[in-house]
Image (tube, rainbow, N blue to C red; front, side, top):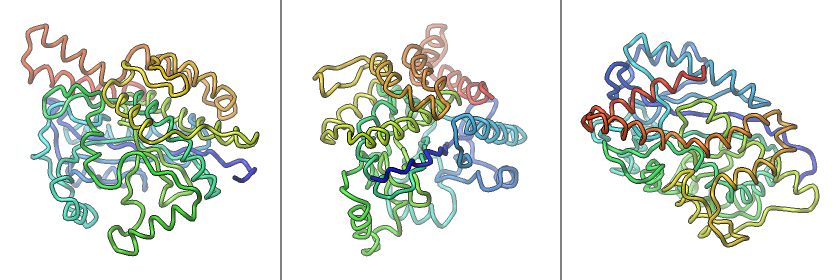
Length: 377
């Protein structure tokens, strides 16, 4: 591993669903709206697989503070332009009530090819995620840090959970999105690689056989980016509240620096079997911040609030250098107050207690997501 410090730059990608601003029902994006957003956001906006879905990406940012400014501009611009068409974006991983069978995919070569390749599995992909890129220029360092970062993926997922409902029903999960996504090939926790060369040879096996055209079709929870010299975390649900997204991005950035910092002292984070990390992944998917994760060293299930306290202490030096101490501390608020999944369930329960039908209660959930999208702007 190189002794030269990586940039630890940060970039955030978010996927949004478009809904009717009055009813909360899912809507496809009008071509005029897409053209207006594309022109206004200069390469930072694009369609996504579903025609009711769009994606934004921040610029390469040195700090989370810079990312906040850019994300605020991106969210605000999409919301403003969408409002001209009676629409609103929501940053949620599953629409509370929409039927995936009625959501058409975007008529674009890339997405037409994707549906042909994946069949019915692709048609269910009415889901949105958040991706966080951290700049790591050296290729072998990128692989080494990826191997160690796998341990923390369940922690990040737990903080992000925003998809408890699917087709109008409470799934019992905090992140149903992963249940849908994991039906695709080349998903889940990444394998461990000993070097960049081994990673490239593994990818080449599939590209040489023309199974995939490049590594963008590898959708692991964490991967070396195909386009950029970054590690790309892909495990998280998208966060309705912008500040929650920034906290998760800050933790991701600081974790990468912490693990690199350990390497300077000839230390490293212990790499546990994917079977064990996978159990924590499931616990985060099922319970969000409420069920605790396994501490493999202690052989105990530890409340996420305790794990976040430990993580905040562990990342204190890195957060100070990367200028994101306040964002890191906010993880305590998320664990104490709950994630979007908890808030959605509470709204649904309150509305049902007030005598509302399931349909009306779910509509209230969706309308709250519209409000949260712009609450931090």
